[in-house]
Length: 115
View 1: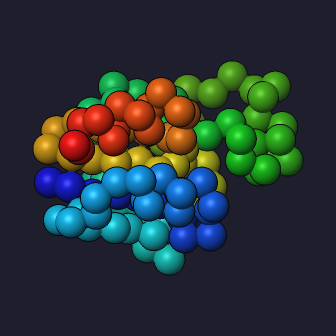
View 2: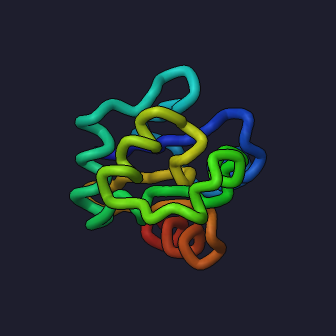
């Protein structure tokens, strides 16, 4: 399976999508097509934690004062399901592999993997 979870208004997501061959990928825009419980559980199985999928860069992270709270794995899962901006993006699933976020090292690994 080849799938990308992204946000179409995110310039970083757009830049990364231009760097990779999109042939055969299913694209899911997470604002208009929210992530399902089954989808996040699939991502968690590959990443080994919900925290790895969670973005602390979201504006709501500061607004909700989450940095001063102790969050559990279930908290991370629920927050991502309730608010799409909490998903670290893009998330790319390729044949049992997962690439999360936009860190340079991660994007380079994704591009190398696909080429």
